[in-house]
Image 1 (cartoon, rainbow, N blue to C red):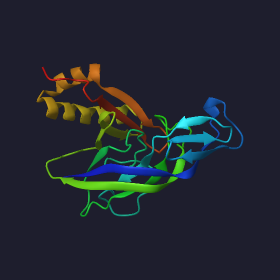
Image 2: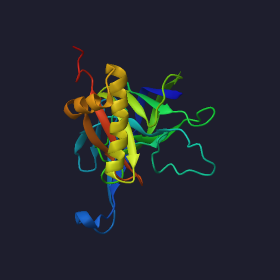
Image 3: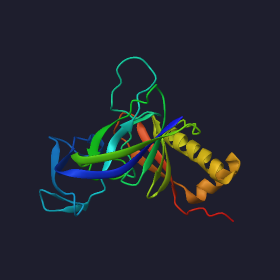
Length: 225
């Protein structure tokens, strides 16, 4: 079955941070640069130490279940059962569906983010504590998922992870084809044709040990005849 995790309320703490480590390929050397942020959870804005302002879109970076394997498992990389997904679309109003891997599911969350761009390119979003994190859980015995899927304010999305972007993209797109087949009762090749004109492939993150890609089908992008 699948575990549904609905994000009902999130409220950031009053401060956050992100930093830039040396990246030789980008010509960035020397000591890390720290960006320090004052957060206003009511106005949903963040202000850095230079006074620059960004919009806040809080979400939990880690939401997942443990793999069905013995031993200790790092929270660093995301997996088909979720984890350190770092998808900026999993904001309030989203429901994340995770394939249940172990008895009791054993869901965990953490890694609060106040704002992030697709890719999380410096290695960190605005990392912050959450004063409020209210989640609602549901069970879906009929759902047979290979990878996480979510219904978000932006649209339906499928999440893929891999050693490179090709592998991650194929996993995300493969599940999106399953979703299109379920919703429109169509064969896989027709689903791929529709995906090519209505689905966006986006780089979720490139910094968590494995790459993440999400396939996004915006609400209303495909309408029934």
